[in-house]
Image (cartoon, rainbow, N blue to C red):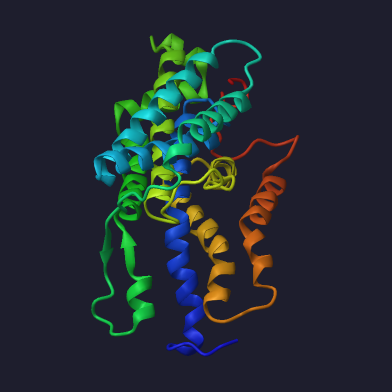
Length: 304
């Protein structure tokens, strides 16, 4: 291991910085999926929405020279994908994977001409100006979407418990019959919840293409949309839990780059598999044919 300017603190600092960078798309995708699943529906097509959102954000940012417009365009595209997914899920024997493949295929087809152009990056907030150490300054240069994701997690936690919309969402997610008895249209609520979830997932994609890693290519997601479904289960459908779990996933994803950044040249690449191993462990630990998961919406297993 080579020496760094901050010695032994190089590894935890690199993991901290990497956790924030890697966790941000997980935050938005998992919060979006939490909204969808709270209504009693699982969206396994999020991977396609994430990648299409990344492509849309990058393309619009290139054409307008505005990363903000890129993010807004990605949100609209994600909402449209969510509406399509929510609508076709009303029909029997619909395969969620079809929407994932549709999103991936559309992104790869429409995004080929945007692989070479360079888009402007999303802004970040420099919180390390108090230090003269370059590593600390880099670690505390945090993208604005991370803070927005943290605020959104707190807002959703409050909204689920204290607003009429949150109550409607929970009622629909817990019991379709109870919702109908209250005069609520479950399919309509689930349609809107899936659209909102898709819109947030697309923000995660915009972050990938416009900040970290900050480019558009066909392998940009690496399965983060699918991993977010496991993350939501791990967090027990709690927005704050999703935020903390996203940081955990982000830290796992940052292990390999952190070791490489401080000079570890052998075996560091094995740690790149940490997020996938963590996903597998979570799925095994939370799977049981005899008991239901605490906090799971009652209608979740009954509704596609």
